[in-house]
Amino acid sequence: MKYAQIVQGRFLERPNRFIAMAEINGQIEKCHVKNTGRCRELLIPGAAVWLEKSANPNRKTAYDLVAVSKQGQIINMDSQAPNQAVREWLEQGMLSEENSVPEPSGTGRPFSEIRHVKPEFRYGDSRIDFYAEAGRDRMHRILIEVKGVTLEEEGIARFPDAPTERGIKHMLELERSVKEGYEAWILFVIQMKGIQWLEPNDRTHPQFGETLRRVKRAGVGILAYDCLVTTNEIRLDQPVEIKL
Image (cartoon, rainbow, N blue to C red; front, side, top):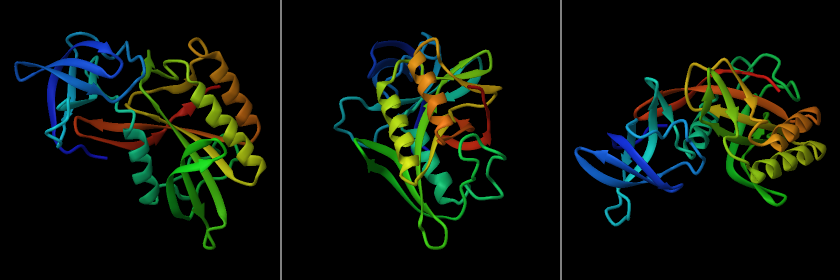
């Protein structure tokens, strides 16, 4: 996915989880933070940031903070970007037999012959990120839950960076869907390059890791991909090893 109008700035402070103050072209601007996670290792005073200028002149904040430089690497921290990137990926036919990950964890069956993609699919008491139908008769039903990952420590990506009860609820819904005949996947989208592997952040939210391991045993597939990230674009690139 690409952003329309990007400007560079310098991060100053984050008064609350929705707002950041940044210096842009010598002016201090109040900006919307498109990530409600902690991001403490990213939003450091003085860090270079990239912001998308809003097309709406009546908005209270004229800019959205979407990316930051960490030790010279650009990391996308827009929590909406992974879903948009995955939708493009699905619709471009990237999830096919020849492009799938060999022996993915979980069901072991690669996505193939995707014929239909529907975002924000109501299942149980949750909205799962994507529902897809595959095969010539579109009778193969797939649920995909996307998790954007921005936390990196010494080349290891970890999720989540803050406790997420919503994330646990969605995983349990996916576990139930497998029993009802769906193919279910959790797709971790690592919003950067240079990652050795991904693992659950048991230190921050041990229940998330426990639930992730449980649903994997129940047949939910787990995948992780890194991303090619520039100042105005993010797209899925290569599979990343998962260590549970």
